[in-house]
Length: 237
Ligand code: ADP
Image (cartoon, rainbow, N blue to C red; front, side, top):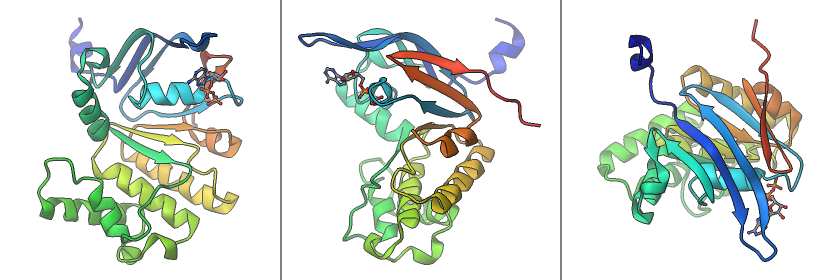
């Protein structure tokens, strides 16, 4: 190993020959063995037609499903070696999920929604509250911290969901069709927020059907018939 390589941080995600075949019958190979390396600060879009294997891929990357073949490292940890409990803990601390449908608690305030996401981590209450206020402010909602989600617009709700995902200070922000329920102006403001988080060094992976969303990412991975391929990035001028 060269001195430079020794200084490089561990990739956030390494998939080596990772694939998944649902046993059936009949068995379905939803993801053919493929490789992908994601470094800290990467911003990727994962695209592909319906049925191509995007959810299967998301479930693997999000530690919600186990590949049937290959090696999967998250922050250098070989996920296959972990007990269910340690896997769940790793998922809770290293992956921040953002979904299309927000999944906020309707009878809890914005602040409580974000704070409650840290409940099962060993973080003191005071620190939880401070950190919640910080991420709410980061997504531009400090003035709505005491509002209920039902009083918020779709875009604001997604900002709360993003704040909640950021609260655990995850290694990877994993977003599944995050703008699927939003109009194009609101989508654009959420994409501006992702750009800002990317500039701050956050690692972001967005699974999307939407060209407008995919264009903003710095890397594009396409899944087609369960095959993963990366499109060469267009260099930013
Ligand atoms: P996408 O998210 O891109 O629409 P999926 O990952 O959901 O695609 O599905 C990929 C393929 O795997 C499809 O052919 C789908 O029918 C199949 N599939 C998904 N889940 C299962 C399962 N639990 N058992 C068997 N086949 C499945």
